[in-house]
Image 1 (cartoon, helix red, strand yellow):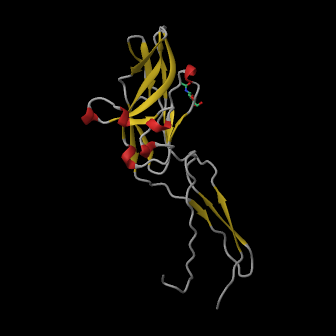
Image 2: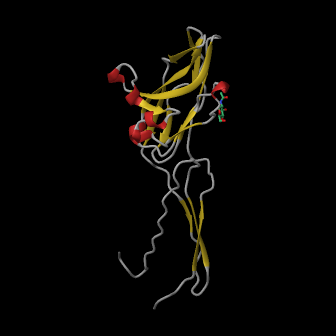
Length: 202
Ligand SMILES: *[C@@H]1O[C@H](CO)[C@@H](O)[C@H](O)[C@H]1NC(C)=O
């Protein structure tokens, strides 16, 4: 007996609010007139999804911010170097493994909003991140590295797609619905549909 089904598959990638960001802002932390506000405590996310690192800053009056740089802080190095850059307006300065994955949510630096989104997370992204703001101090090029860091913990992917299969009737069309979790702006999920015949083991 061989049954033939006309099958329409409907993909829906709509945003179910399934990624979690505990974005409770902490208090501003200030030094020499430069203040930064980061998330209070570590942020947890899942591999394959994205995470937002909320951030805002203010500078000393004589300092005009021009661009911001985000670093991944490796504690064994003590200080962030150019080889730790994960976000920069010049893509040539960004570490290849972060290139194209980090988005500055408000590109207008004069808004002093340094929040970034990291897409297509991998567990290796777990760690601490540090901000530097470059600009002009009394007309001279200068930069300020903020010491507070924001911490991200990337867990293994645990969320599952939602699949809905209605009762199937021979000779009739059916719509199978699949929704991938998350609403990240990174790459689209790769979708594979598989079918197993009832009378086959494999
Ligand atoms: C920063 O910008 C993002 C995106 O526009 C917004 O969601 C967030 O609330 C802003 N944060 C602050 C502190 O203004």
